[in-house]
Image 1 (cartoon, each protein chain N blue to C red):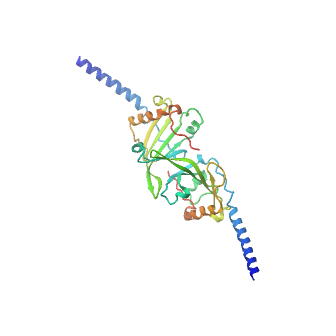
Image 2: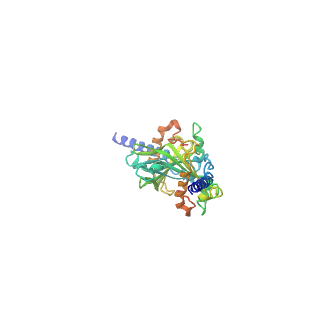
Image 3: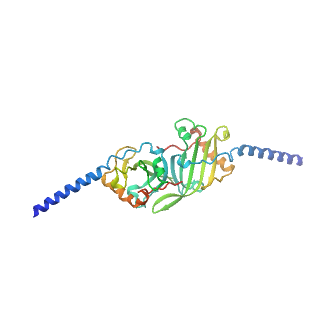
Length: 164
Length: 164
């Protein structure tokens, strides 16, 4: 009996792990680095300061950029395939009452590919460290991106609004 | 003698006023509104807070945008004719430790036209009120723009640096 239970447990673990791998790897290194995003359209910016509940994760000066496809999405009900948003987070530098962006902390990227990222609303999520193309997060954080963006399901999972 | 002095004074005033008019009117309504600037390249941003010496004039959240010609200027020693920069100033809105841009206060524009604006380093300066195309400053303030930008003569009068 004890042996059977153990076998069942091991089998379950194998199934779960395989499922987890299958489910999450597709969202792993498939989101490409958004080359040239700094010349895309600037959507909006904000400074997240120490008294914000989001400070530990997103504290600093951030700018959001959208590629041309994502810009078209703002006029439609849904963002077209290939839409990309970049959340560009810089350290906060304060001097004589002026706040500016300092060193880049990371960029967060979301790309629309409904076939590939069907399980996360059609969007793939990725984070790249500093000024590098080095992946900065694991599957758990990627899932967290989706868990937050799902609140915006009605807006096709996008929080940003173009600030004319 | 007294009469001669008075005549001289009046003559001087006429000359000075005419010179001022000639000198400044050319820089008056000739700088066009930069249609579509919100989709130009975002150069940099900053928040000028109440403890900054620049607060009374420029307090708020600002973004700087450059057109394609101005972008080319960053790679050269000089900005090409037709280069345009926009300094887009929004009111500061603070909520739960996050600072965002609110209503637009004004936009400041500088346009490179060496023939037209020879007396101010080849750049014409203008300010438009809020979200309108209404001119927001007079010749005195335009002169002040130049008096400040002249400090950057070595950089062709441009303060901004593209933040890659």
